[in-house]
Length: 342
Image (cartoon, rainbow, N blue to C red; front, top):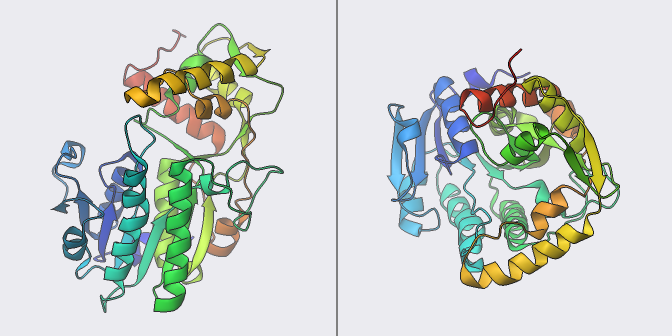
């Protein structure tokens, strides 16, 4: 694989979303590579996890024109990782500002910068929506299903159109399900694996496509510097998907727990989710269960990830099993999970 550490040494880079899970891992790897890192963070964002690192912080909103002007001035690479996450009480306008308006401002500022080299835009495999016949590759049609996915799709399409007109050099990254040490998004699945019975909803395989956050950060860096990545789109996931049952079995084995799965009908959970969302959303309360989360346990999500391996020569740090094992051990060390004594 190309020596990304050498390519990014002393490079001037801007990272948005640096205080988030993926952004923080990326920032650490960029600094390790010797890059000069600048990061945009809201006034209320907590930066303690990155304290002591040589980061130039630009405080402000990523969709504020003056903040963006200061942040982009003189940089060679932009890693646009910032995202508005699905939370109760967030209006559609916030998703549009964080995903679309920020992309527009950053790209427009970048083309005015004579030293600029490449814009690495982080989208999501969610722009494809439901995959009718998996696996899907980068050319699979867009069918975004919610405001998060719709604004991510709008931002990506706008960037590609703008680049064609302006000459901006870019690469689009569409991550599969991101996981790794310290993240809580899949913690519920890890906890379920330690239950006496692991529930599987419906009759499908429930294929899930994972990408360890450390692999994702390295993929972003590779897409920034590899000549073959210029103006290309890459789905970033492991070489193969994994079933939810396989995930549970791997996690249970790591925790030293017996594993037994049972299949139960999905429709009561979808019904409960619809009722919860209808009641909770108007009140700005996070529903205890919602349709998108139920769908996680019923739908197949599988992608053809050959492009980043074949075109850029990417070499993975973690396979599905080794990544899940590492994350489970990290959760135990943090006290979020309990392992059975050996």
